[in-house]
Image (tube, rainbow, N blue to C red; front, side, top):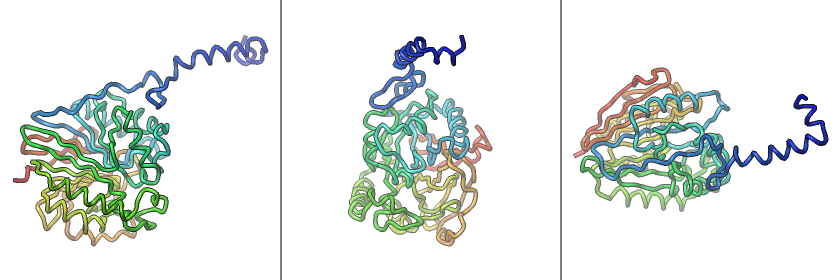
Length: 352
């Protein structure tokens, strides 16, 4: 008998339904409040070493697009796996926009699985992912992202902004992760750069508290200081430069000798140097899977970049791979068009 006739049979149909219901626990199981197919359940996450001769990591952002805008996220994830299998990173720095188009609504939102866990399944990527808040994340519930982090093995986001200190070759490494949604939109939620839907997550008081916290963190002595956020300071492609951060954030980074500022928001790769200062080096890595920005968007005032120099750019999807040693940080820019051959490499010496 065929399947259709069997289901039409009043005696056999209910028995098949009961059989399928009984098999469901074998196929679909909860994992600490989330739901995953058992075949792709999260593997144990490798801890970041307390001290090592080198730290290897990936910088990637603007990746949580899924298949709505094509297969770019999956294609970048494939390249990321190939590079990570060789690099064997200790951790990943996310420059934000982990979940498009409007963040999440709950700690067990299925988009965490669809747009993150199921996209990056290689054992070499089962390392801590240090997440930051992007503008699309900020439309949803930032609190839900933090709550999700409490039981997610890789999704590390203990607060809206946070820091961690590592050791490499006897040098201290201070990594500070910012909530640029607060820094850019906290004082004034405007259409264009910020959206009214972000209002529940930002306000002037929270912005002031964030800047106060940041100054305290940057005052801590460290041999290496790296800052991660979503919005760019200067940018020559995509959404372009962010005047609020040029005026308020950049002076703090210069004053406290931050060597590198990593950001996303612009869906491409860029390496930028401020003209008036030797630091920080500005690295745009926002090519994780959303449609890329090959040029500056129409209407953006490019003259704001007058005090910056574009060293390298690629209007393509991709990411940055990094190796940090005691006195040298090496960055390699990988693009989909270049595959596993870096499109650009740069060595950044430690500030003395």
